[in-house]
Image (cartoon, rainbow, N blue to C red; front, side, top):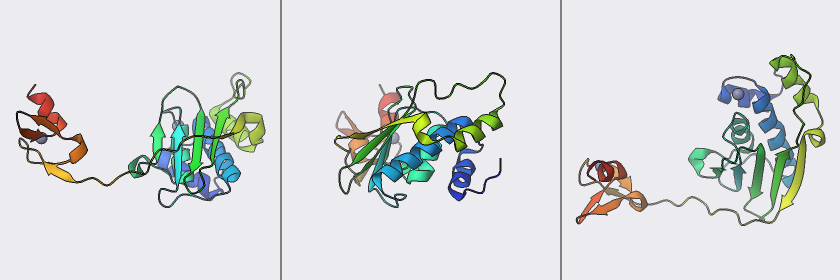
Length: 177
Ligand SMILES: [Zn+2]
Ligand SMILES: [Zn+2]
């Protein structure tokens, strides 16, 4: 399949291959951004909550700019191809979920054909889309670090543990228990 769609190419580069799962995330992410009327998130103004840990979520990350590292990408693995994207600036959120049976293909159709079919299929044939009224998770806080009394490495204050008056990181705390 020719990749003359720059955003799709970006998703494929990040994920490593082009598969039906990635295409589902790509289409779902596009729908969510369109419905919200926003572009990719440079900072933390968008937040994504995904209900699977499969291929699709890599496309959601590259498309929406919500990433695990920025703290505005939350995985609630319920085993569902469902993706919520919210806009912190106005509180709007859109949930895009795969319709039951939307991935029924004829048997023995190879992967490339499926990907192409998905790409060309109208999004409304694949997903249900709903506006959500939810409390969006707060922005990631910047926390101070403290020094572990055992390994001497810095550890985020909120993750440190206290044991017999000593501040320990979780790995040292577990080792000693
Ligand atoms: Zn994949
Ligand atoms: Zn330690």
